[in-house]
Length: 382
Ligand code: C2E
Ligand code: CA
Ligand code: CA
Image (cartoon, rainbow, N blue to C red; front, side, top):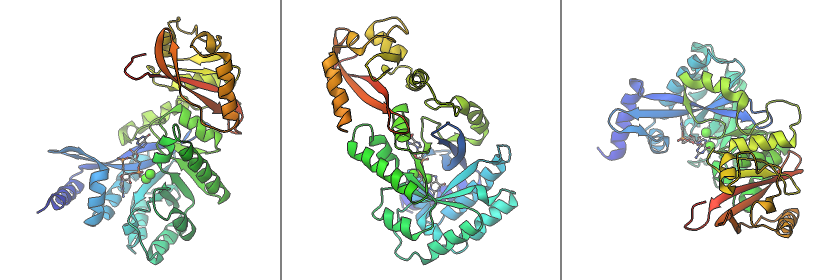
């Protein structure tokens, strides 16, 4: 028996003795931070090997035909758990392209939902393009049946496959999930930012819901909001959690970091405060308005500047770091030309520091101000 066969055998026994359980990761509205639903992610804890990553066992489960069984189990467990949660939340399940070729899939899903009295209108099915399929006849039939039953179909990991656009036009998707690799690279690569903006635009022009995956920082969330992206998922809003912690996640969602919680337009100060708050407490980050005046700063930023907590606020950035008002004006011009801000090597509080200044924009691309973030200069601590 080779290693893969052994893994498949162990997975099979884990499936029959409750060793695999669903974890739930929130998908939120970027406008107000409300949790709209959860993606269900499989978690396998082997008594000997410990936690085994889905990236390792899912492809093997797919190859050995165990994914239908896994899905059935995850669905039944999740549907039962969700009876305790608000009844408007959706649950998103991952289904492999191979599974879509199974003509029984829709029936099995319908049965799992009926047995647990869970409405199929709250079931979203996420399909990845991986495992290319040339004949789409049966996958399309399966998806059409699921849609007729009330499910919503999402295209997962959009942009990573060879033929995302072909898939999009040939299968009945109503949601696309932008792959986390683009979202995570937005920060540093203008190209990724452009791809994300293009996908958001494309999705909306086709009438599709667009979810950005892998959102880890408030800056990413802000950039996405600026692009008009409405939905997001990622560690910033919540990690995958077991069913018994979902209630806590739901009750804490009101004060989700980096997210407005009402329809009242947020003041610049409030937004800045939220932004600063959203950063890890040990990140030296500040937010300044368009004139270069610090509006809010993290404690770590104040410490780095060697000023008392809250004392950086109100000061111009050039009074705090070795940046002249002229350099700041140049940076602003760079932004107006839609070019990437250069990183600054400068001194702050007497030592060299790498400083990242980035524009922060609102939903209509209106400049709100700039974020200032400290990174350690090569070989130095700040
Ligand atoms: P996916 O469908 O793209 O799921 C999102 C993955 O990104 C999850 O990894 C999630 O934990 C991770 N993630 C979410 N937010 C962040 C973030 O902010 N930063 C980072 N670095 N990662 C984030 P996970 O749970 O390890 O799953 C990996 C993949 O395995 C999934 O990717 C999915 O393709 C597959 N998978 C997981 N559970 C199932 C399942 O029940 N059935 C099937 N067919 N596939 C599954
Ligand atoms: Ca997924
Ligand atoms: Ca994904």
